[in-house]
Length: 109
Image 1 (spheres, helix red, strand yellow):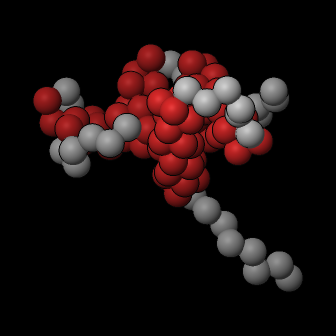
Image 2: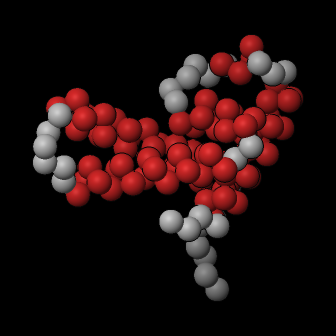
């Protein structure tokens, strides 16, 4: 029997968020240096950003807002309190995470 690791949707989106933020830093560094030679690393990081951005665009606007602020930007921990009650935030966050993972699973580029 396969004892593989099963990740929940939150862990998947959190991992993609870390990859996205790292890729954004790398791409920004390349673009600040205005180098004319763009290597494979730059192209791979840019492709990752493009894929995640395309998936986010397919999410409904509320999910996109939550996902960007929770996983893809560096916000304060309690940023959502000015927008949502805690119970509403956690309910909408779960919906957004599930939506993102479903779109990620069906993504074709």
